[in-house]
Image 1 (tube, rainbow over the protein chains, first blue to last red):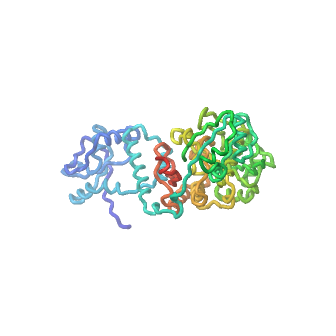
Image 2 (spheres, rainbow over the protein chains, first blue to last red):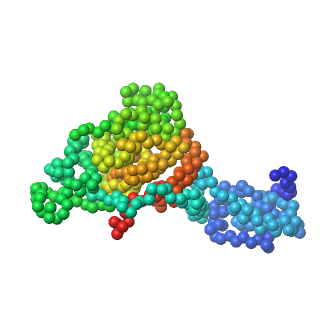
Image 3 (cartoon, rainbow over the protein chains, first blue to last red):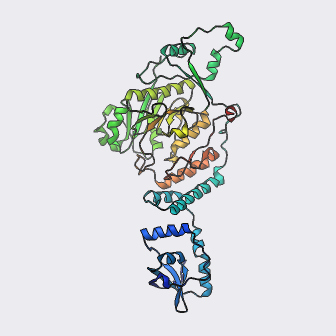
Length: 233
Length: 255
């Protein structure tokens, strides 16, 4: 875009209390915002000028009411603008909301936040958290990530539950491995136990089909029954 | 009993300084390095333990190359900043004894083989208040990265190189789709120091743009099998949140 007009007449440094408050200013500044802006002003200082225009020999604010209020007796940088009444009203109505239309590049924001400490002030911390939550919600709401991949969903017949059998003696372990048709694995280290696993289908093949069959085929007594624990995945 | 036919492989990049520790923890591991870094690694690792791959970019490409180069039935990959194993249950002790670490790896491989599964791994967090390993020591769905074992049909599967930096998520979801579940023994946490700290072997390889592009590509590929919401317990907001939303728990059985 070419041929844009420069409406800044000069940069002037004036005492904040000498600036006239714009009677049409519609923005309200809660205590949290005042605290956060005050924190940034005291830690860094002014990095952007206020904006005002000359009305009846005085500078009337268009942007920077809160900063001027916080600065009180200090000198503040003010950009003096050459605007008529209509333009001044338009700017007053749109200056902050237009900045608020910007979107967030989450990766760049996170990269930026990695290198700085901004958590001294509760309001600033909240602002950044809200920004991140909003970003996550935006990503989550994107329609392209909600489609279902065919075959991925859990089918009605699918179960991934398991039964853990803990052998606490060598005898239990050897008997279990023998009966389940698993060859015992030699221990590699004294403190670390060994582990075998068996599919339910194979285990069911090895087990009697019903109570009658279990009674008909007595199980040899084991010195101490293995502790069993049912855990679901 | 037939011994396990496995090989532990450690892909490494610019971490020759960590090889002393790594060889104490994993004395039988093969260290796989870009041939451009051969001199640095030859100084700290005996030649028979080294495997040089041609110049290539990104872990997925290296993983694919290693899977082809290693002939063993079971392929076990462990990252080069490995520092030890934390026990998530009971004593919560930190294991640095090579024999014990090998026993944990072999137990995982044996259980995976017994069950006829293709992928096994361990916990990705030592935060036991989140994963509850005392109640649920094994889980059938988990992102597979940093320390994992591959066998069976998955030995012929390839990593998608476009998902650089997020290849682990894609691998886990592909396993979910093809093999239905994997074996994650969350009683153990393989410790790699600070993850996503900006000091890893991927630094300088995966750019922020590639990472973002991989994240978007994954979201498009996997749809609602991925969750983009950040788990409440994660305080580090350095990366866009991404985790598996695949459910292999049976809600009816839990009632």
